[in-house]
Image (cartoon, rainbow, N blue to C red):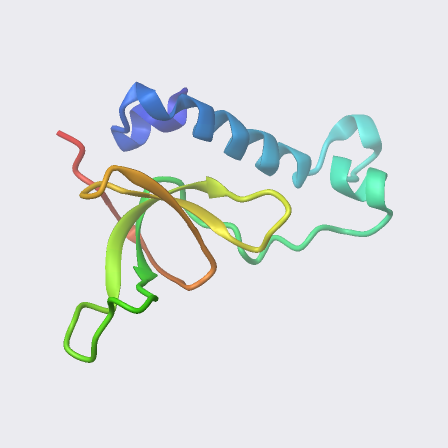
Length: 117
């Protein structure tokens, strides 16, 4: 729950935070496995971690679909909530539409966080 408080995220997203923490812990070294990650112990190869980003940072998701014209906005500002298991996508929350997106086409601004208040 420290992630929620440190980024000022409301408590309704605790499920996404728990899923993200489990994902990170499965890809982190542990002393019980003699310097291996749980992922490495299960699959016999080291996990890739280059895609990990800062929780709660602002992310711009690319808009796609038939309703996107040449002059319309090409991205929507969202907040990173975690990683989608089984895909290479990120779980992102759109604050204006109040819904979750899963996308790979994302540009992150990790130094910025959403002002929840």
